[in-house]
Image 1 (spheres, rainbow, N blue to C red):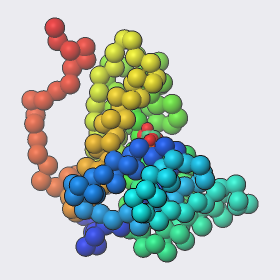
Image 2 (spheres, helix red, strand yellow):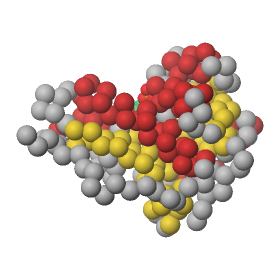
Image 3 (cartoon, rainbow, N blue to C red):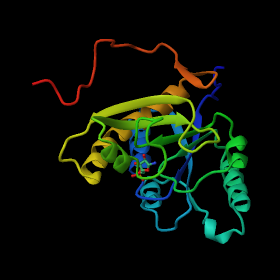
Length: 223
Ligand code: GRF
């Protein structure tokens, strides 16, 4: 199924924290590497620095605190209303730290993207980088995917891999992965905006994908 995209993709970005992925998306739009408009940035936390980043670029911001609602359903209904009010056609989860119920997911079918700091399906859930270190993997990374009703799950659009070094801490590995997140989130959204993301069952096929079959990341690197 080819995902149809209106002439200009209208993004609603959900953040809870520092918003460096939001910043990467803003920067990609401003330098015209990404053809999309950010209609609204929503946070469940009033103190999220992502809101400040949005304001600095003149983007509308809305705070919807889960604490102000009697139930998850009521909180999510307000999120859905706000996203619809702003005409959002793709919901972008960028460090949004609330689990979303099937009600929310079904409100935007194939229209929610998430980024996760691991090579899914490995290490879903919280502390993905810590999980990778504890498991002793040699290669870690990041994944952008469409969101389905399972946590950190759904058709994968883009992944990037990074080496794991013996002296890595959660912080150093997270920083290495985050640098790649900033590259692949705008890339994935641009693929979607260009109508190149095609769903085949539970897989994404990228139209006109360029291939480099001999490229590989080896870790440890050959000496
Ligand atoms: C990123 O590591 C992302 O993968 C995860 O939450 C973090 C958000 O970072 N979902 P930021 O707020 O974009 O800086």
